[in-house]
Amino acid sequence: MMRFSDQQPLVSVCMPAYNAAAYIGAAVESVLAQTYPHVELVIVNDGSSDQTGDILQEYAGNPKVRVINSKRGGQCAAANLAYRHSKGELIKFFDADDVLNKEHLAVQVQRLLADPGSIAAGRVRRFYNNDLSGALNEPLATWQDLKPLDWLLIDNGKGLGMMQCAMFLIPRPILESAGLWNENLSQINDFEFFPRVLLKANQVLFTEEAVVYYRSGIADSLSGSLSRPRLLSAYTSLELTTTLLLQHEDSDRVRSVLFLLWDMWKHIFYLDDMSMYRRTLLQMKRLGRYSNKYNGKDSLLVKLIGWKIEKRIKKLIKRP
Image (cartoon, rainbow, N blue to C red):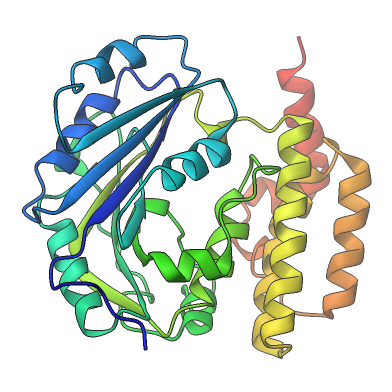
């Protein structure tokens, strides 16, 4: 049975940072302000070309903060490097533009002390324009204790559940068993990583008082660019997760959620990469026929002219 060495295990917050000068100060301060005392913050400055390094230098004398400067390797490589320099029995991956509430770690640690073979999951509140007071608070079906596969599938029928990295607190042995971030991936890498990790846990334990404020609307964020390498990463992530979940449970409920995910990305691949679009159609055909919930949310224009024509029009409008 998995156990911690004491009743106040060290928590390692692992933060990859790339050109995050505008936000990283608030992120770091939210970790240092935690009411839980046994925390280390391991930051990898991933080849930043802005003032990120200068800001991090201000924390050089803080015993809770360790900064590692590296050449640009990408988010996954930086997260893995931070983990390898960490010492904690509990691990939280944390983006350099997000913010934790003060009680976050204390609440999650308390839950895991009673069940160290599980993973704690908090609430995610999305905010814009640096305004935490206006952060959204949208209840999800995952706001309860669940078995890992149930957690992944239950998210109000919208596909795999929200997997913002900072919402989870993960015992180190679970990570060691599941493996670290896939450094070949850059787009929806969380969709490959977290199902693999969560399925190694006994349960996903909901911690309502643990909140991560998730910054949205950043123009150059990782999720905002869909170059061909990022499209290929997204396809690979979906393909790996499809294989993983079907190996875990080959059932209608798994296939229907995977079908929905592939259907969503079908719309994204179309015209931008027709090879991946055709391969996506084959993936959907292998999964079987399931209800197409994604199209049910289309605009009136799409319902009138079809989503393919709409996308062609959008590409023509964007063309110089």
